[in-house]
Image (cartoon, rainbow, N blue to C red; front, side, top):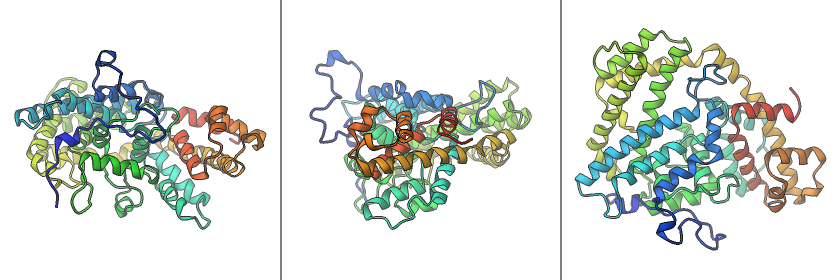
Length: 444
């Protein structure tokens, strides 16, 4: 069904460069101008981006948590990147011992690719966490935004909006070269591949079943180019996952389950003894050290289990035989799997915490108000194709989202193109800013 995946292809430093770019802006004119590798530049480009900084004001689990040490999207992401780097180093050493690491690549390259992918994995998540995703989907359906008979060219974006997915928005933000705010990120294909857990789009039947996918219709051609360059297309046409994506996924799984569980103690949702007992089951012994130390030890044990699982399943992964649904944690020792199941079983209790529920009830009206205003104004602009013909209020809406010159420069773009920019704007909002904008554009 497939040839064995090649690290020569998998570690591609190529970036998506549209034909409109007259020259590549990525390579320094001489090595002395920039001693960083392309993968180190991926890392730095995310760290210095505004969308990454805004993760500090985006919900991980608890919106508007009054305790400063409760995880937000930024602290969660930094922890995931730290664990991902460790897993990347371990695999890099494994490849070096097997003499499978290409001659022009290093162990550090593997670690940096995984770390960069982890840093970007949540960068497209909307305000209010998963509640924001549901709010966007519900507004699209209730507003009948795409109710009228649609031309073929619009059906893709209708699917994208109806099933909005943070993973696909993250891919869009770091892959495209025409996003105004993060145009310079443009990840290498290796780092893009390491981000992709669900190698299918919104039009794939699996998107309906799993409620997850990794690219919108607007990025389909970029996705296919990336997959083909990395050699991830099987002979039967099926796309398989990049081996490093299993490590990025494991890092996320470890950090969110352990971090969210520790936060539940700080928020007084769960008793400390209950959490300590489950952490103790992960490490296989009773440990009386403070909870933060016990948490660190549990993470260490899970990281080691992920390393072992990766090495155990290495041949199957490199043969494209490991399915997208088979995470590395599926092969963790029984005590760890049991403990992680117990954590998962407590999520309904954590998620039903009253302050969290109350804050999330505000997501649909806040995001709905913003989406209604901006889908209306960009429709007008796409029909008029003249900024000066917009009404006073419409112009003010535009100016909240984009500089006037940006709007003038792109006034000839069609409605579908502008809808993409609306979603970039809305998904990029912090919880606080979304609340502020909803208030500023009128109503409650």
